[in-house]
Each structure stands twice: as structure tokens, then as C-alpha cells.
Length: 331
Image (cartoon, rainbow, N blue to C red; front, side, top):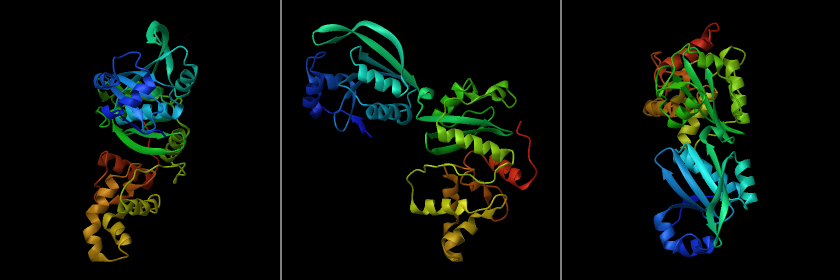
């Protein structure tokens, strides 16, 4: 996979070689006057115009392969938080066009005599992609009694599960944009419970593992499933958090344990050491990226109180009540 980074002034000679300097007086001026991204191997360069926080207009120098394009999409949409990417390429770049289309871009227009290449004017294709159009990653939703469960991930993994509250703004900008695309947002906040948008929602064109997770969590919500076999990609984290999450996976459906119980497991039953780790266990639970699959909701306070759920204790209450008692209505 390509590594995206900014081009620097000392890269000018390589920029000159790639571009042929058809559009500018010098490579140094090109770098100073443009936002330029490249991969570490200098396979291609991307000249960007950033339009506020919404969109990016780009022009490629060279012929980027699909790995670079996918790296660029991930970098700009998910790391930098843009919503729309536009790319202009000469009509002669058929391989680049194919790579763009395979990555999810759509041709928006044919621009006549738009580019000046090799001392002549040339027609160009304008292509675009928005955040929800990218098919290698996506977010699906499950409306239920207390709110909306969001499941994020790619073709072969899930990496985040969150709970969104009715009539409240999602905390995560990317989730907010996907929810808006699905029709759940009005003036920046989730629509209220009972709105027709939740009944009408049908997930479409989501990555395969996200679809599997939606199916299994729906089965869990109607008491047809007690465990999961979803492929999860966890973030790089400390060895301690990994051990806590492994302990959480072992808590049976419908059962609860205290933070102190988990700490005792981690210390081999050493009570004094466990007391010092109890708060750290709580923090590790709150940082669990995939609740339900890793059932942090089954960990409660020593006194039986429900504390420490990242999206709100009311969701923890719902999940525990759901597991301990008869099936609850989902609407």
C-alpha cells in the first residue's frame, strides 16, 4: 500500500522529472503554490486544491495505480475528514480512468480543452467520489428501541460499533455524514424516535463483513443469537487493554462481572494488585471499539451500579436488560 505524504522543496528535481514542467515555470514554484501529495516511491503526484472542509479538487501527474488511489481516498476522506474528492485527468489516460472507476469514482463531466499538455490543449474527464460512495469501507445502521447502532468496517472486517441517540448530534463527524446520507439527520441531529426514516432504511452496497455484522446483531436483538463470529480489526493498543478485552469475551451471555473481578483475573487473584488496576480496567472497557461483539456492557460496578459505557449508560442498561429478561420490542 502506498504511503501518502506531502512533497517538500527538496523533492523538486523528482517533481520536475514527473511533470515535465508543462504548467509552471519551475518545480519549486509548483510545490510552493500547490498542496501536493505523493507516495514514498514517487509513482505519481497529486496536486490538490482544498475547498474548506468539504471537498478537494485534484490533478494527477503520472499514472497512479489503484493502490495509490485507494491510499489517497482513505487519507483524504477518513484521516483528513473531507467529504468529496474530484479528479481531472486527460482523456488519453485510459488506465488511470479504469483505476478511478474500480475504486468507486464516477465520471461527472467531459471538460473540453481543459488541460495544457505537451504544448497543446486537451480534453479532460472530471471524476468524483463522496464518502458514502467508497465501497471498500462503509457504515451500516440498525435502528432499535433506544437509538441507532452503527457498524463500521471494510470488506473483511468490522472496526467500530457505536450507539447513536435519537434527537442528538452524533459525536463522530464521519458517522454524522453517513447518517445524513441515510436520511437520519435533520439540522445536524438525529431525527426523533418513531420517524419514518428509520422504518424506511434499507442498507445497500455495504462491505461484506459489515453486512454480516448487521445480520448477526439483528439476530441478537431478537434473541436468536447469543454469540458472534464476526471478523474484527482492533486498533493498535497496549498489551494491558488487549488482555482486558480478551477477558470480556469470556463473560457468558446474560451474566455480569465487576471491574474488580476482571482485575483479579488479570493479577492471578492478587487482591492488592487488583485494587490498583480496577480503574484501568474501566478505562479499557470504555475504549472498547466494538461493544456487543466484545461485551463490555456485561461489566458493572462492584455495588451493581451501571457505569462506564462510552455512548451512554442507557445503552448498557438496554443490553443487559435485553439479555437478562424476555425479548424487548425494537420500536
